[in-house]
Amino acid sequence: MPSFDFDLFVIGGGSGGVRSARVAASLGKKVGIAEEYRYGGTCVIRGCVPKKLFVYASQYSEHFEDAAGFGWTVGESSFDWKKLIEAKDKEIARLEGLYRKGLDNAKADIFDTRAELVDAHTVKLLKTGQTVTVETIVVATGGRPNLHAALPGHELCISSNEAFHLEELPKSILIAGGGYIAVEFANIFHGLGVETTLIYRGAEILSRFDQDLRKGLHEAMEEKGIRILCHDIIQSVEKVGSGLGVRTKNDKALTVDTVMLALGRTPNTENLGLQAAGVAVNDQGAIVVDEYSRTSVPNIYALGDVTDRVQLTPVAIHEAMCFIETVYKNNPTRPDHELIPTAVFSQPEIGTVGLTEEEAAKRYPELEVYRAQFRPMKATLSGRAEKMIMKLIVNAADRKVIGAHILGHDAGEMAQLLGIPIKAGCTKDDFDRTMAVHPTASEELVTMYSPSYRIRNGERV
Ligand SMILES: Cc1cc2nc3c(=O)[nH]c(=O)nc-3n(C[C@H](O)[C@H](O)[C@H](O)COP(=O)(O)OP(=O)(O)OC[C@H]3O[C@@H](n4cnc5c(N)ncnc54)[C@H](O)[C@@H]3O)c2cc1C
Image: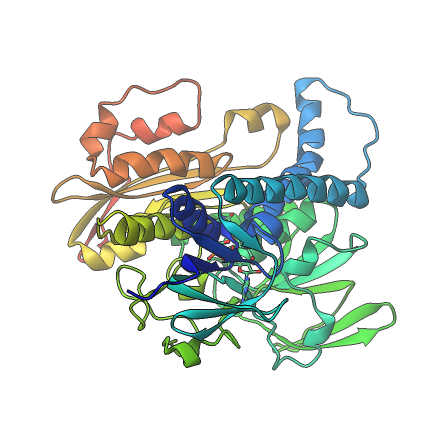
């Protein structure tokens, strides 16, 4: 047996990398981990966490308005962007510290440097030029915003990375993209008082979500004053005075302070030494893995966003835990990518698990669709024109609930809980037998007794 400097070396200190390194080290393995930017990775430093803090900040404008309906007089309010950034940065630094501490406590060796593969068993640490030999390698280098280099003027635009560190809050912003990052930021900026336009090439925002919710969210965002341009793309961006002039394919001309591109993410696989080590990547540059997250080289694994399976933090962490089971616990475990509950932190929020109505209709001959659309109780006194949508998709043959979709306050929290019965294979009858919690919005989920409509062979009846 050759002897190596490390049992495991992890490249990338994000959600998946830190989890694999920390747990392997706590099992007594000799572990090294390298991070080129900041521990915590995208999720903690410039993704989920700061984004959610921004969502909270942006909701206060509506809270202040809604308060009047409940008898409150709120004095003049103002918003200080620099104060928010400062508070957010402090919290992120605290979390980064916790990630480091977890690794340190588990006795992993922490390297603050970019790392690259030299061959299948050698990693180079760029800061010092040191090379280390390694038995098993995990590549968890994540992804980065696609900069859309073909767009004239793309260098004048920002991505979500920069959105977390803008010196000033812009007065107006154009956001390109129809995915959840674009939609969430459109709501954040609008809530903070920025004149916001969203431009998306498709027919409707959020392409992989239930059509009903996509439409409902689109309408709600427009009602708030967010301008949405579908079927259109940015064709060029140029400097105009202190702002930016934008031309679109449909020949619209816009002048805005800031243009943000949220047009997908690119896996971080360039110059990583993958070729030298013999690790295969696909056409998009993502690392190809088998069902156990093993790459084309048997001792090299890859997990998280760099493999472009499902780009979510809990998925990267789950893949890391499966890697630990497989490699260090003699218990081969495949990551389970079925029925992943997820949320869009738009305003109103989307929470979803399982098949959309459209997907389910393609897969099953007959569906029952239970749908409720109503004004949430809080909106009665606040006077806010706001509708909540709840939908359960049921396979008529065995009554299993195969999809749940919610638009409205706390939809993400509900999706997490709905993920359990749906993963467990509960039927609509199980939902019906469950007592309601009153008065809540989610009680609708257990009180929709007859189907709103059926889908038979793809046709609504
Ligand atoms: C704006 C935004 C909002 C998001 N919101 C959510 C959300 O609400 N919920 C959710 O579940 N997911 C969300 N995500 C997705 C989530 O952040 C990712 O799925 C998750 O971080 C992936 O984890 P990872 O370990 O694969 O990679 P990452 O967390 O990206 O970590 C990879 C790390 O590797 C480092 N690295 C890269 N190359 C090297 C190298 N050669 N040497 C050393 N280090 C290297 C990088 O600096 C990075 O820190 C969001 C993402 C973004 C961008």
